[in-house]
Length: 148
Image 1 (tube, one colour):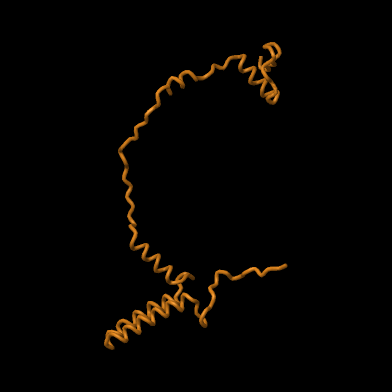
Image 2 (image 1 turned 180 degrees about the vertical axis):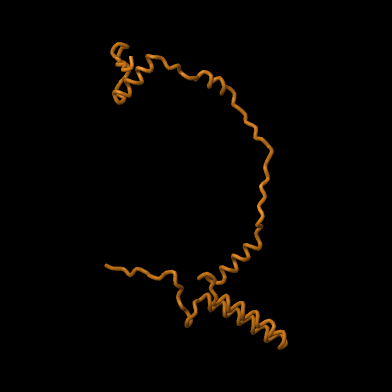
């Protein structure tokens, strides 16, 4: 059974003529604003309101900046102007206090480093030579030492 794989998923569907749903809603809102200005204001004021409204909603509907819708440009501009652009680094002079638990120093002293003796060096070499098969059962005479 074969299924149709959707293609062109980044292209919005045209709902009404050549307009997508977002474009249609944008033009509808602009038309409502112009109609309200025409109905409730005198002619000069309604024209003063209508011209910027037509320009804004026309740009919002049809204009693309860098192949992206104009709304993304407006959101980027709003973010740029509303967020602070100056970042100041304030150095904190407070030094954190480190507290040791009781008994930690004694454990570290008791653990200490083991002194590497000739016998321990021979055992480690034998472990490496046998690939980990050496278990410590050989006497000092049986452990090979090549640098003597």
